[in-house]
Image (cartoon, rainbow, N blue to C red; front, side, top):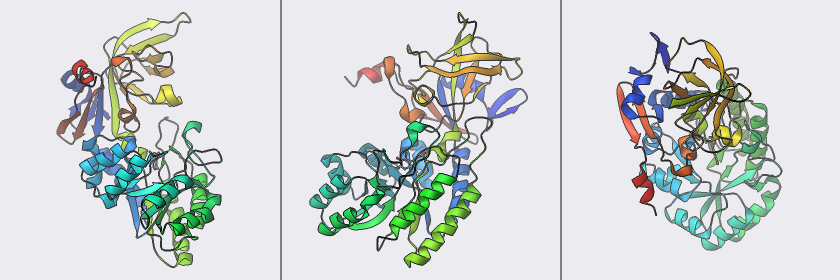
Length: 407
Ligand SMILES: *Cc1c(COP(=O)(O)O)cnc(C)c1O
């Protein structure tokens, strides 16, 4: 989004006009940004000759975006059977999908196996069940390196009490189970958390997973997961992809030397690819003063459409695109859901907000639409994809009839 002649533009589209055309609230994606982020990843951390990228589809599973991402050569990391089906629907071949199910059922295990998709297993009991059911199969193992990091405490997936992965102490047990059932361990995996901008912990975790990997023969890949953060707050700086890439490359090359082979080094970015490609537009319908004299702005969307602030306390940048020259004032920006946690910002300085103004909630492409719900029986918003001059509706607004059809 760019400010020119007192108007915000995306490509050649005036942002404010988009709501007139497609209604409000509206998720707006920019395909150019998605392609740029993928190119940045490939250049920064894809230095190693056998580097590979699987997009974590849970960040945003809109098929139009997924097709674009697959078109850029990425595979898919799926965490549910439905996500596996979506990846296949969007054109991914089974060998370009990894299923990292958490607490999967026997039925889910069987279904994914029969689709020819590799399972990434994160518990000894599931590994045992998989071995008994499908002896002789190929499998990937998710380890917990006992190191975690994330933008919010709640998003740490590595560490002593995490429910994810097999403890790094259980390498021998994994080998025993694999041997007993003739399982071929082709991949070692970790994913330590989401939204990190610091390099220390990811590099420490890389050392642990590479140490584990040296204890397994014949690996086709080492998957170091995703979690690459993006700046949400104005004072946050971008992840230093080049430095990260050089550090990873150095370690992986020395691992290859010890290991005597060059397995694929795989990354699973989700947020990094889509987060900054999108903003959620919403129209102001209420402005009032609280008892403590705060100015409360009410909008036509809420935690049902973008839950990150209510759920994690996440910060999203918000811009008043209707009044780029307005005087700065302090506001609480709230949604239309009957819950106290339904807000997008507190005490936020913004260009003067007036009734009917359009606000843009930025960095909304990851874990925005994919986490949206029908709470309070409100339908999901329209999503559009802008690609240069081209604008496409990639999800139609949900109507009451759509909702009723499920019952
Ligand atoms: C969620 C997830 C990712 C992606 O995390 P981001 O923070 O979106 O990059 C990668 N791998 C696995 C197994 C995940 O569950």
